[in-house]
Image (cartoon, rainbow, N blue to C red; front, side):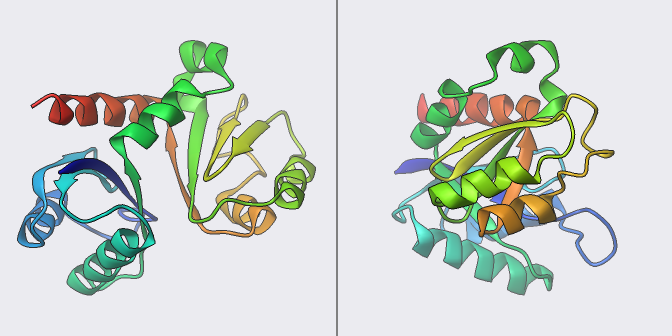
Length: 184
């Protein structure tokens, strides 16, 4: 069975988006997933699954999580191998080392075309820097994420797809947990 990382979009941000991680783990176990672990309270889950990766697994998890917790959310799923590639291809290694909380990886539902990546570059009005390829973007927020005009809504509009983001600290912790599960 393959090890996967699931990222829930926009949970535990306020009223109507609450998901207890204990309840999330229980749901995934009832779905037949194994070695289910969560990280933080922001909807990060690592698990083994007999299901093949892809939009079918993402759709299944999104549907079940939304129904179980009565909220609208999406789940973005990446294999542990794909996540290692995300970590290994980071175009901002200096920033990852010096200020990992201001570097985010944005997981995208679909891979944008070149015109969408150009639109993201155009959307940047501050000191942020962005690089992306495939279904991931890396964004550095040197002045902080909360004050930036490069919001998730602007990123999604520019790239033409939905997304969810995690800071570099979380990205590397997810990779470490997935590697531990794979080694068993």
